[in-house]
Image (tube, rainbow, N blue to C red; front, side):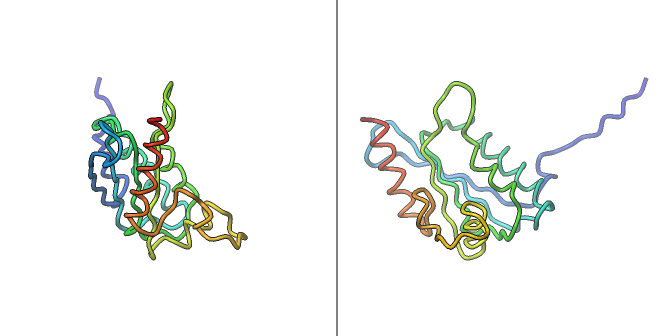
Length: 154
């Protein structure tokens, strides 16, 4: 009997580019932080659903492979305008039996306003600076992660 299986690849879900970087903490021994950089164009509305699934799957794979102690999601080069499922990528570290890892998000001009409305609501007048873990530059995100690692270590 012939099966109807067809080959599938995660890369078929999305054209989003993902790069991974890992570095030791400068303030806490034996702790590593990982930057997961997403770039490209996130589909508008429900057209971005497969992008979100891909981004989350690839982020979780990186956490499993390298087991960092903290995560920075870098969306600064991600063109994102609308789509609720992007929020699921913030949950890449939630799994059974372990506390969530310290996490920060970096935004840039291609996504800043859309991320603001995603996280704070479309009718909100608040800025992203009201969210302690969202930053507009990498150095501030790293400083925040270092502080979180220090708190976790004490």
